[in-house]
Image (tube, rainbow, N blue to C red):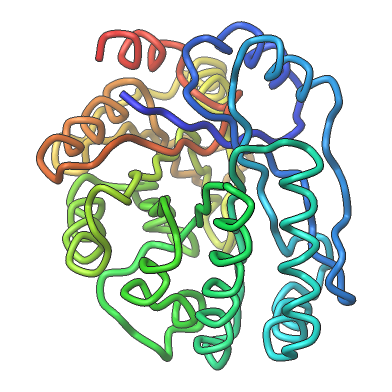
Length: 307
């Protein structure tokens, strides 16, 4: 099974990479942030590059817009200006060529819906530039249930057009719930996301994006705290909470109360991971893209090795 893992610097992540470097098909590191002039902020790691090189692990470097707190304004400025857009395309192509990356991954978030046509034009130009350089073009796409050009988070991403200008699309089929408690990615939600995705992009270009983390919602707070699998298990153990596996959602959950505040936790584990993996054959997908290395239940590696 083709399994691609997102990589971001965090405690323990490098150890996880060393331990599983031969289990991973492709590493997708969060390395290059866009700047307002169309150049890139280089946050790459020579150590990780060397590990990948020594072990024959391909790197598809991420180009993202988290280099500035004003993500939406930053990416709008770049995409809406033809000159800046072309500068950015050249910057990305140069990074891919100079580092000998076989591919790159576009991971733009909070793109204003009004930049839909600009994003399409950018991906068209980037595809031509990178294909001329012999590179693989991939994109991380927000989960959609239908084409909705007005959607504040995903409206800019026109699957049917973008699908023509990429080799691989990683459909981020998670964060089903965020402002209120609920599964990170229930199996029903993932199915619905894939039903739409395969209707707009050829299935052989689609990799299922899978989360391996959890969320902890405190009652009365709008945003959850992110937990790794190990943290989710530790919190439950320390507070004596009983973990249950929700058979409908196909995901683990528990609640606890501390300092008078009720908390609800939903998190991914090997069992929920296996449930999502089972969808690959049903939809004819080549593999998975996992966010992110270092957050996972260690038992997911047994599932990956067994396929």
